[in-house]
Amino acid sequence: MSPSEQIKAIYEKYPDLPDVTWIGPNFQRPGLMLGFDEGSILFTNAATGEISDPQRVSPSGEAINGIASIGPNSLAVSTRSEVSLFQAESPGDQTIVSFPGGAHGVVATRSGSYVAPLGPKGLLIVRPSSSMVQGFAVTQGTEGHLYFYRMAALHNPLGVETLVFANRKNGVGMSVFDSEDRRRVVRVMKFQDVDIVDVCAVVPGSLSAIAVSKTADLLWITDTSSNVEPVILRPMHVKGTVYRVLATSRHLVVLTSEALHVWIDLVGRALTGQFASPDMTMLVMPIDAVDMALIDDQHLLLVMGMNAVTCLTMADMERQFASRSAAGFRLGGSSGRFEKTSLDDIHQDWRTEDVEQRELVLA
Image (cartoon, rainbow, N blue to C red; front, side, top):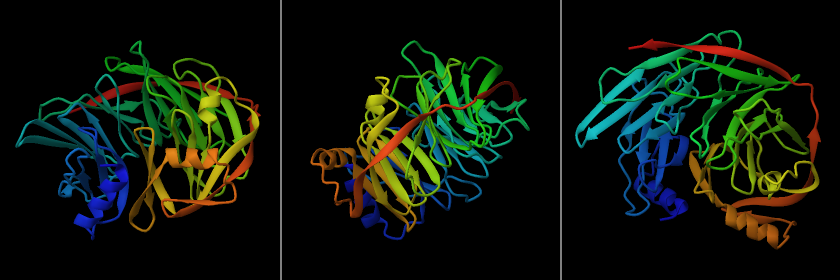
């Protein structure tokens, strides 16, 4: 079943679901995961069409804002009130342990740790085990210096892992990650008036990342393990306040409070060093969405403000672009248009700072 077919089947089976607050891939098998505003989650299986019953996982009943998985038996779920770990060593043998502190999401590293951004309190780091006592660790040393809002975990074929952070008005942060280290350095880069709200990986198996500001400045970071300054791309005519950024192997997608913006072939061109481009084409789709996720590099899922999920395909956008139907078209019931947009390479005076983190382990 395609993602759109799975979404349709979910709402046919459960027409009165609460509001969706998070959506992404099913980490255990091909399919989807949905999180809801009253603290429950739901799974689908694309191969069988199976849809799980909604399961309450948040002890506080808060909205789900992040889900991550390590292997087939471990799941982490975050809300504004707690981060909960679920370990299932065998059917019917499940342990649940919660950290009583809200997070802005949660990610899994390739080496087997969960990391959750805790805002001004730093990071929560835990390497899950089958024990009822988990080794939760909260970083110290960044209080008053950094605000950890959103993050991404990257790795390359050599086994190097990095974490990249949206630190809001403190800019973008980068740190080489080793689960055995109790101390690490976060290298922070910012310029005047920047407010970084989201980050994403560029391509799998790479240490490249993209950060986006509240006003749609795009920061292209070629190597998050080095001290090379990002390339700043400043697009024109972006409507609304930026919420999220995602990248396919070819295109860049930015969701704002007013529209979905897709830069056709921006990623593909930038990977060859073609950053500044006065003739880029941008797809603009006025849409009321609050979050988005990318499935298999081809399906874009949008969490709508009216308790619905819309699925668009990158292939449809590419076909429309190839036909140059710039006068207007419809995708997934939404109207959109292609327009030329300048994308300028901006030079800024960067301010950098190295902030040391220490981990305080809590039982």
